[in-house]
Length: 412
Ligand SMILES: Cc1ncc(COP(=O)(O)O)c(C=O)c1O
Image (cartoon, rainbow, N blue to C red; front, side, top):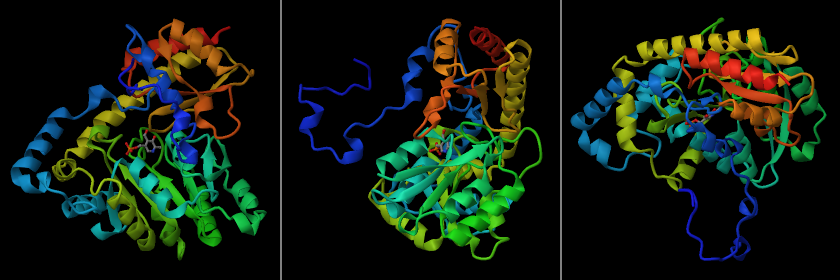
């Protein structure tokens, strides 16, 4: 029995009258791969985890100590459901640096940004409501929509992200009875493709959301991990340039990929009527995000440690990504296409000859290298010829060696 198997006394699943979305829930295809990760010598491009070698352990230890020492009661007591005011002030400053002008009252602290999306779905989506999502997409966003009972409709993307012209055409032809309520996207260094939506498309997307009255959900855990190219403002910042558009953008930020996911600190910025309801939903979810983590995050952000830490993480990801792409360019067969991201943690690859990435994975595991087959990132019709490679975990030498092994698995 694995640690995840609960005790069963033989009562079959059907005996419990589960709610429809939980009758036959799908497990995470990525978690299924974890059993291979611990194998001796395995190089994993599979996980979406930030690098464990790069955590700022001393900086976080100081922040945890300072948090507890300066206000133990704030750390130990229940806190405000919307989040501790000092942290919301620090996050408002951080958002200012991202080009978004707001105050602490515009921010709701969440237990990871994943919780923020779940809370948003509880306030907006009833079973059968239509929701749009870019495809390929972050699997936990797909799962959240499935569990909310949404009618999920996918939006076409190309190498730069959402094809906004195609989306506009899709929306203009939409039957009025089932208007989509929201559109989920990761516009900067997307999971899984690594793509970044260009500025003109962002502006067009924001205008479209406002004109069509669709809540535009911007999930932005990776935006600060830029190692090449020119920064592009978040959709939320660009919404200020389009009258009324700020009322249609919901933004999710996270410290998971830039500080540490173990803190479970995310935040939501939503129009006031939506934010109020998300806070009500959060009251029945966890009452408040762990106050100790919030205080530590606040001390960390206020200590000025984030900027130097980000420089070291971004530098490491740049060299890991370069090493991986260099080895793939040198050793991989010609019928494999790779994206060249300007930041984040992911490279997206396609086998243009129509081969199946699941077959490649079996050969890769034999060679002690892993990745995630692209099928995990599709809603209805998976593309079996795609794969996601995360360059965050292996160091530079391992990234090169892993890509060399992968190239060998691809050569058949
Ligand atoms: C696109 C995207 N959104 C959200 C998350 C989850 O973030 P958090 O740890 O803040 O819940 C992830 C984690 O992999 C992600 O890739």
